Length: 480
Image 1 (cartoon, rainbow, N blue to C red):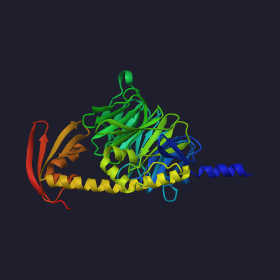
Image 2: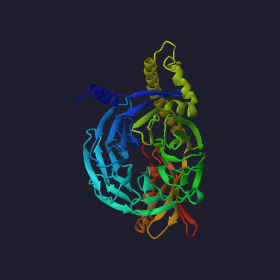
Image 3: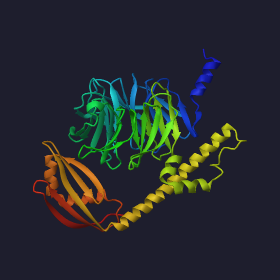
Image 4: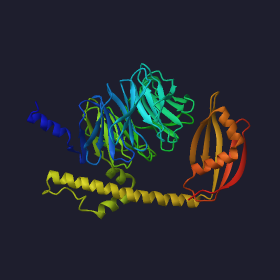
């Protein structure tokens, strides 16, 4: 029998609950009935996916906070979710030992990836959308690579000795990075499934589980978060495997998320807070407070407008406005210009304004600010790129062997200030040498799409054995 009380309860689940905490307004998304383990923004920032202990995946409209649909099909706790690069699909991993692929527009299950002998702890989509990687739990800490179109397993990566908490693809899709409770971070080459590098950054008295990993936007570095109380946030060089920076922070980190341009890092911690960092400066720029227990998962929208977060044993998701103070920190002139253009929207709360009116005006203000900031930011990037291309009349390209073993060779290719890492096997290395002129010329076109046409390229191939180099110049026509 449906009572009036139950109807009211169901309606409340569909509405957005507003809070104002220390001047920061946020949405609380209500709909799950048990702890939310994982969240992810769609590539266009319009949707948020969430996976929960209630064995469901939910999709949310970010602009309204309303639940769009619930994806059902798992038979155990959903541990991890990720969007495809196009935003058309969502992939989920579960303690029912499966990975599922879902259609975002219909909510229908497309296929199930089976083959994990135990629980699935983490999932990730490749940048081209062709592959899904999934990491296993403590009793079978393997990584599996799947073909999205067929659902078939391509290969299995073995090497970790405890659960794989987090995995991520490199921006070019050639590598996977994994963080494990065995206190290591491993770099894998997709083509062979072999470990290229193992980073042991939490050994000794501070050995702790690596809870979350992410690639920098250029693929040169890896950022890791661990539950080491004194050094939880580290940045690593993937060529050397060495730690290059430790973000000063005392506390255990459960989850990290990198902004789309790699400029900002968001971390969720055991001290109930979320911190936003400037990666290049290694500086904390803001702290979000409002959770009542450990923050377990964080995500940042591609346009920097929102940060989403969850907490341990919490069935709700918090959605925070962050674009305002990110802009004021890094682009103060643009920030001031936008606010002055619509001063009535950003005025302090009037004493005659009701709480509901203030909330409506605040949402209008943040929406306007986000739209205007995106416009100004794109113009700023365009001007900077023109300036760079005008100054680049001659560019040097270096190809250097930086690591070698029986299975593959790791090359560093540098064009100006752009670096790419390529791992190839012996046969590919032979073909690279035999076709070096055409291959490198083609590589230059791919690595320098923003340069103006008819640039002069000096190509230098370094022989690491004899320490000699072969150099030749080539004019490359690059389409504008």
